[in-house]
Image (cartoon, rainbow, N blue to C red; front, side, top):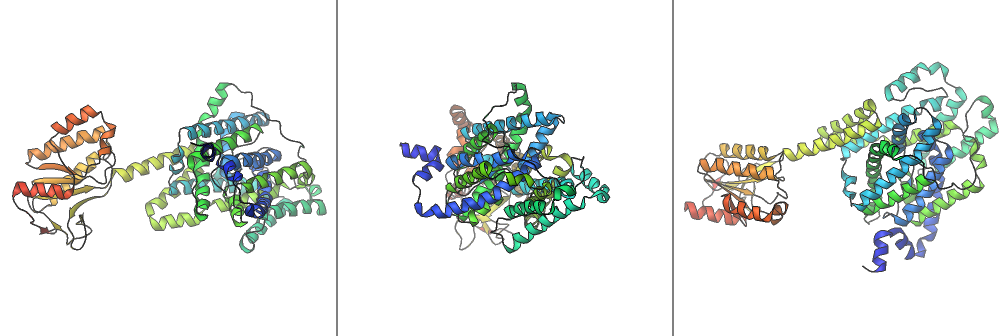
Amino acid sequence: MTAKHLLASFVPGLAALLRYDRQWLLADVVAGLSVAAVALPVGIAYADLAGVPAIIGIYSAIFPLLAYALFGSSRQLIIGPDAATCLLVVASLAPLAGGDPQRYLALLPALTLLTGFLYLVAGALRLGFISSFLSKPILTGYLNGIALMILAGQLPKLFGYSGEAHSFVPQLEEFVRHLGAIHAPTAAVGLAVIVGLLILRQVAPSWPASLLAVTGGIAAVALFDLRARGVDVIGALPGGMPAPQIPAFGVSTYFELLNDAAAIMLISFTSGMLTARSFAQRNHYKVNANQDLIALGLANLVSGLVHGFVVTGADSRTAVNNAAGGRSQLTGIAAAVTMLFVLLYAREPLALLPASVLAAIVFVSALSLFDVGSLLHLTRMSRKEGWLAAGTTLGVLTLGVLPAIGLAVALSLAWLVLVTSRPHAAVLGRVGGLKGFHSIEDYPTALTIPGLLLFRFEADLLFFNIDHFTERLNESLAACRTAVSWVVVDARPINWIDATAIEGLASLHRELAAKGIVLGFAEVRLSLGYAFNAAWLDEWRRSSGISLFPTLDAAIAAFEEQVDRPGELTPAEG
């Protein structure tokens, strides 16, 4: 490969910037300003959600953007704090910190660095396919559960009471108990911001609503002296740049964090890639999932080094970028530089930002995360998949966010096994006016050949479905109204076969042979033999007794030659 190709393969963002079209400059800079106007207040808000100082949210919003802009494959994706990821971070670190805020802050970058390292390992192993590991119903249900937990968790900050509960139902019960202790000024500010954000989303979706909320909250504190009325503010932010630092923990601590980091990586990568692919499709290009594993790994390593938390692709900020006309990775750089300027030279006003405004921003973000439309759409498409999504949501609310990841993975695997272990099977016949062979269930007037059963199993043959294959074939034999002397399986849908299935076919062959029935396979893919030892496979082909034919037509010709009934057809129902 040439140096140019290597650069494009390993540093696609930098390669894109080196061949940058200057006509995009104005659009990218304007989009970067728009993204910064949203990303900065959201970063502060998500720091509050993660239970860390506001400055950490700002660091997490700025520096990872620069890493992804150089190494990421998406032109529109904006990297930063994410509501679901922040909740996962809290669920992971809170038990290990044992209520010690300083230990919690020390563990935070360790978790981020470990997550970044796992991203890099997955990228080196080219595991980009894991972004498709969680099905749409499972991911929709999981994120809906996360959204409900975030909504419940923001109630104390929105209404100004002290919250102690950490799970969904107790948080709702706690809210009901504290209705008489609501702090009116705090609630008024928070509810006003929520209403304003929701209205702006409908009437002016392109406006930087979060920035307007932050500006309005700061102005309200300054004009009406809300601090004297008991409204909490975030306080002064430290100045200067963060000093890169690797947390000084032993190997045992990182092992304690390993499972949680892997779970966070799975959820954050799946969610981020859904966003990246969605906007790439809208803008007519493709993203590289393996490259984005590397890019997100580096982004999280950068975030960890500056004491930040785990970041991923942010759908709301990516939508702002796309709506503002961002054309390339330069938008992320422009946004990062803008936020860095604010941090260095204009941070004093942020000290007056009310905590209830941040809670309102997170609350509205969680409302966006709660996707009722997708749930209803899934239910209309398939009631089973709708129930699968709802069950995952219930699992998050009852088990918690981290155990529910195990549930989500288990449900995905169970759904995969269920679908592939009970695939559709069909008896085939000829249909007038159509080429090839078709299911007699789909075409009841299809013509079959007396004495010959053409059978198709529409899945791979594996240990968990070989018994189902045998059952369906025997059911088809029993349903035939004329005696069958040959069974030929159309093997075109079979892309993989394992040792258990091979043994199952040998057993089926012996069973059919005892009844005087020949078993054959047509159009068997050569790739099916790649999983087996070549010498053993040659011996098995010679000794199995199972007939192999290059095409279905060749199998039919062999059958007709043996039974001396060329060309005879009969209606399927006869």
